[in-house]
Each structure stands twice: as C-alpha cells, then as structure tokens.
Length: 432
Figure 1 (cartoon, rainbow, N blue to C red):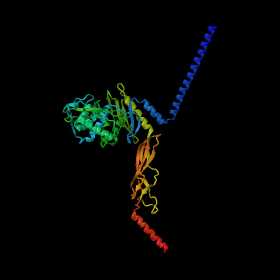
Figure 2 (cartoon, helix red, strand yellow):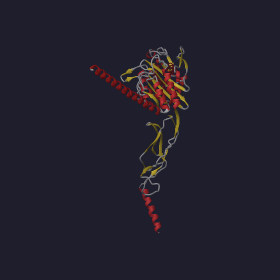
Figure 3 (cartoon, helix red, strand yellow):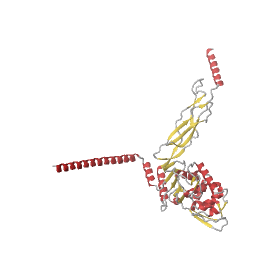
Figure 4 (cartoon, one colour):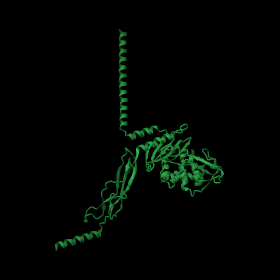
C-alpha cells in the first residue's frame, strides 16, 4: 500500500512537470510570435527607400561610410560617419588641391630632398637633388599615390612637412572640418603631441566636395584625378616616368569623375570618390573598408551607395513661394493717413530664385518663416525683414531673404502738425 502511494505521488509530479513545460513553451512561443509580429509590422511601416537604406547599410563592408550630396553638403546616408579614423592616402586629395591653389606657374620646379627620397613605397623613386615640374608631380601623387612626390610637394609649398601640415589643417577648418587632423602629406600613419593623423567619413567627403565644387582650382583637380595615364620626365630630361590611375571606380560607373584610394596597416582600405549624373553629384567616403585580402570591398561599397543615391534621390524645385503677412511698423504713417492707428508694411521675397534641392522621394521639407517682430519707420522698400527657409529634419536646405515691398514714412511731429492743420482748415471750410 505504501509502495502504491509512492508511485501515485511520482505520477502526480510527472504530470505537473509536463503541464508546467507546456505552459512555458506556450508563453515562449507567444512572446516569440509577438516579437516577430511587431518586427514585421515595423518593417511594413517603412517606405521603400527606408528599406533600401537599411539593406545598403547592412551590406556595407566599411566600418565608417557616408553618401554626401555634393551640391549642398548634406549627408544622405551614413554609417558611423562622425567617428575619427586614419584615412591613409585619401589624404592626398588635400595635398593636391593645396598645391594647385599655391602653384604660381605651369613651369614651377620642385627639388627632391633627402627626406623625400627616403620615403617608403609606394614611391616614384626620386633621387636627392632631382628636379621635377610641380604639375607632373601631381599626376604622380594622384594616379600612382607616390609618397615621395607628396613630401616633395609639401616641402616646396609649406617649407617643410610640418609647415605644409599646418596649411592642410587651416584649409580643413575653413571647409568646416572639426574632427580632421593632418600630420603627413601622404597619409602614412602618424601621431604627435596633438593627436593622430585622422578624419571622419563625413569630413573626408566634405574635403572632396571642396576639391570638386568649391575650390578655384576644381577644374584642374578634376583633370588630374580623372586622367587615365600620364607620362613625364624630370626637368633635365634624363629619366622618363609613366603613371596609371589606380582609381578603378572611374570605369565602373557612368559619370564617375574623381576619387582616391588609400591603405595603411592602421587605416585599412579607404576610398573617397565622386559621381555626377543628371545634374546630381554624389560623393562617397569609406574608412576601414577591410584589410588584405579584401581589396575589392571598397568598390562593392562604393557601387552600392552610388546606386542607392541614383535610384532614390531626385532634384525638386523650390522658390520660397509662401504667403507672407504684413509687418507692423513702429511710428509709421497708417495707410489711411489717420493720426492714430497701426501702420503695416507689405513684404516680398527678394530676388525669388528657383533652387533645385536633392531629395529622396519620401522626404517632405517644409517652409519656415523667420521675420523681424517689427520695423521702425521710416522704412524704405527693400529693407531686410527676415528670411524664409526650406527645412528638413531641422536642417536648412535653402533660404530666401524677405524684404519690405514698399516704403513707409515716419509719423513724426512735423507730419502730425501738418495733419492737424489740414483738419483745422477742412473744418473751417465746412463751417463757412
């Protein structure tokens, strides 16, 4: 009897355990199913461009990447775009544009120093004392990425590598780069008491934008970086050199106009390049885009980002055409000429120019009107009264000046006296 009770007790325990397990599995399944449903629901709420953006970002090899609108400088897509990283030979776009902006003539001669001649590969192979035309060295710099040419250019323009780095950092600050620090003209890994030779993907793209779109030497920069090959000799004509452009992106996609590759042990593979098509300019910057044996990752990432931009971003035209209120004018003469009353002035957009803005199909910018609270008489037609801004996610895409559309005279003592005299005369005529 005792044995029977014991077995029955065990059976009860087993049934309870089975019941508890069933409940746990049911709850777990419900939670999992619920989470999957929520995730599917969230995905369903995304627009097609948003889904494409997620897919592109998920497929990138680069640790840090940016797709930039070359016209406005707006970031269209990014992956940790503001993280500081070494940038290897993409540094040389800054070296090139500074050299072009400081070059005095096409026949400017540069002499190789011992420091330049001792640079590591990749190198042109200059000898100390050997002379070259500065413009020829720029092809060596940008097509073959020669480190000795970079040092020759830096010493010639800046007096020394350190002096040239100072010019590089000054220019970076002017462009708006706050997290970029240059030490070398060739991008070799380096550090000093002020920091590490580095930039961010966003700021690297901004430097390329300056080189292509804003520099007074942008045409020359495009000509050099877009060349397939270049041959030249040293000044004495004793040695000839041939350079081939290693920017494979130039032949990968229609509209590719410029770019620069880079690699160091610390930086990994890096790239910055630009494409222009249908009045649109896209710039891609990639940092830490793989290490050996992944040399082609940068081309895959560049194509993916460029194709995303080309597919989903189109130019849309805006002209600041919004309804503007009338603005009050302190001490102004009212429209009805009364001694008392509120004076207002009509407003208009100054030089209403149409502006083409690059937007994704699901982006909807809005107008924001920022006006002066009041103007003080006398007001002349054309007086500044504020601005109308086109805004997307608190970023100003375009701006138009608002001005007074008419002149408003001041309601001063003399004017008031004249009005009183006119009224007095009028009343006398009536009484007569």
